[in-house]
Image (tube, rainbow, N blue to C red; front, side, top):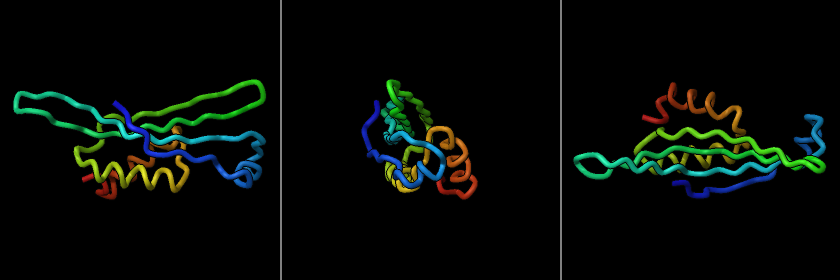
Length: 107
């Protein structure tokens, strides 16, 4: 199951600097993975980013999901806040999560 966390449009100035002339929207979701074990419920949380490019006569959608990051929902909320504030795209999500894990952010 996924729940919507938030979305942003990348600023026009940033897009122009990169030579992009069309709008790009980023959406952030909290993934809730409910795995039932013998001892009861054990929820594990993850994240998903969806990037939508609104090109002329064409919409391009790219996404990346990391399902099992933590069983601490507050940590996932903090990660989502950081991802959104820094306009992280699907292509860089895996690298960012690796950096978090190296810094013990996910522990």
